[in-house]
Amino acid sequence: MSKKETTTDIQQGMPSAHEELEVKRVMNRQFVTAPDKGVAWEEFCRKYLSEEENILTDESRQKSAKSVLTAKLFRWIAVGAVAIIILLVLFNWYSFDNSKNLFYEAKDEVAQITLTDVYGKTTVVKQQISMISQADQRTVSDRNQNKSSISYKKILHLATSHGRTCEITLEDGTTIWLNDESSLDFPEHFSPTKREVMISGEAYFSVAKDTKRPFIVKGEEFKTRVLGTQFNIRSRKHDLSKNSSPITEITLVEGSISVINTKGMEQKLVPGEQYLIENGQWIKKEVDTYPLIQWRDGFFYFDQTPLGDILTDIGRWYNMNVVVEDYEIMDMCLHFVAEKSQTIEEVITALNMLKVAHFTFEDNKIIVSR
Image 1 (tube, rainbow, N blue to C red):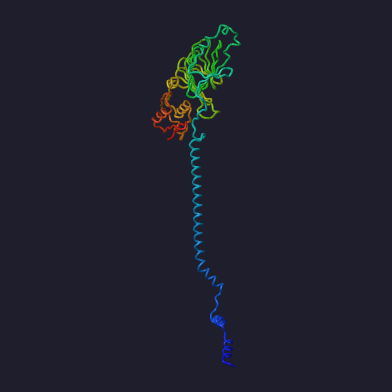
Image 2: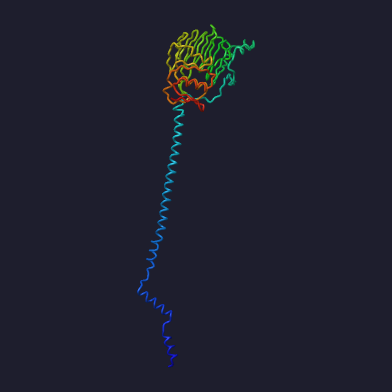
């Protein structure tokens, strides 16, 4: 065997470089433990991923806390807004509820004087009316016609609204001053035997003397009989109840007058005496007639009069609601004078000068507070 062949054989028996590397890898595995992939992954997650998750969790918690806080804040704001609305509604209801604070209620009507005939036709008239001229305009045939068809059976209705008074002279010469929110029913012509009218509200009578024909004034609870005299009748309700009876004052200024009640009992008055009729009770007393007839000359004139009566007259004249905070002060008796031609603001100023309460005017209301 030659030397060349021997070298070749030896080389052929030796491991290659790749085989040597594989042998080393096997030897290393015997001495070094291979890492556990699962454990390694868990360690990786614990070390790196947990911090990110914690960060996300903290942010979520913060966002959740902010959301809860925001929700609570909006809830409290909503509750507060509702509470404020309820308080405002209750305040307005308490301050201006009709059943609790409204002392006098204005009317929904136009300020005017109207005359309605027997056929129901209504005409707006002036402050002064004279029926004498109308009587003089009758023809001779009218005067001589049968009594059964004479025009004294035709009843006229004269009515005043708030802020209006009227002076009417009837065909017999009797003059009647009609106060605001009052009415008078009278015949177009008086009968040959009597003169009769019906009153509601307040009126002042200056009756022309006629010994043959007594002048009779009827009201809801009374009847007066006179021949010639001057007297004032006031018959009004003092509260808001539609079913309440009016309080009536019949005051004699001059002459003599007989007052007849619903039972037919008759009592006479002398000048300076008054019959007060309230709830079916009749009381006769002496009074000062001067304050009672000043309305005829265009004045509010009250002497030792309850504040409630004063404000009722003012509210009726100006057609304004009267709202009262404390009803106790309405019984306080006062002396107060003002002209009806003044504005409501001027009257309010005069009322405040009494220094018994605080009077304000707003939204068509006269508000009375302590």
